[in-house]
Image: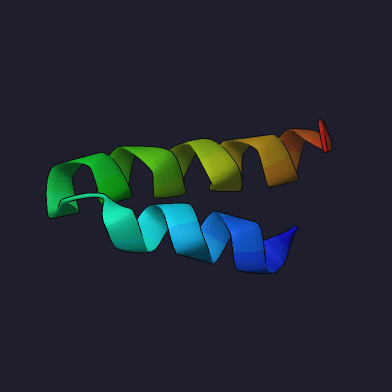
Length: 33
């Protein structure tokens, strides 16, 4: 799962990366995995 996330993040530009990163952190904080 982690490798898959890193793969997709690596394909995105910085703005998309920042938005996805915030979403991942939000989901982790809400325990929605």
